[in-house]
Amino acid sequence: MPASREQVERFYQERKYVHNVSPNTLLLYQLAWKKWEEYGPDPISFVAAMRERGTTPTGCNIRIRSLNAFFRWNGDKPIPKLKAEEKIPPTLSGSDIQKLLRFKPDKRNVRTHLLTLLLLDTGLRISEALSLKMADVDFDNMLLSVAGKGGKSRLVPFSFEMRKQLWKHSSKQPYELLLSSKNGSRLMHRNTLRAVKNLCIKAGIKPPARLLHSFRHTFAVNYLRNGGSVFHLQKALGHSSLEMSRRYANLLTEDLQQMQQRVSLLNRMR
Image (cartoon, rainbow, N blue to C red; front, side, top):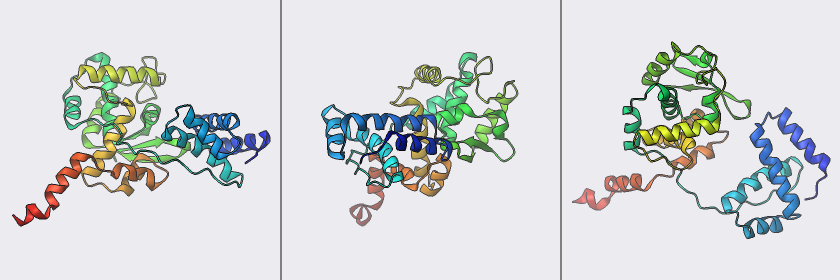
């Protein structure tokens, strides 16, 4: 699968200017191609070199997906992905959610508490939540105008309870951004992660892995548990394909246990 540097640069330009991919996605393409140049020049040597250096199948697949975007664009055969263990994403438990809802934040934690409620109620990505402007909130129709990945906009509904919280906040927020620093600038991801972690600890919650993204996972799992369809979940989360949303349909062990008691022939025949 040889390719010239000019072809690769052309691919980057098309993805950036035509497909409007995010800077993070563009960086993934560049890092994957760097590894290809280091480990290639064929799929077997590429994958073998990554595995020998301790890269997990999931990590390999991230780079393979990035490379395959170029190979398909260039008319080359894509690299087969590795079989990886599908893990249940980290989520907040029901008791954790209750603790968060009952938590009474002080002045220093009001903004962070509002952010956690917003993530739980809407399933937004943290980058989407931190980019929201006051003008993006439609209080009458209870909709958020969200700028998603790849510049794709979507409308995300929020609840009556969330509207109460946002309305209270709006009367005290003098800046353009919905959630901003004291001087009105955008909150940094690293500082936000630290603030949310500290809030969880104060609320008596053990922060799960991938803390900020765990709110999105929690929203998705509970959405399906409470009767929401995978199709509607795809729209709410802004997934580009239905398959990404279907991953959340892999029920947790406790769901399978409860379902077993409901459908068991032995239970019904007693």
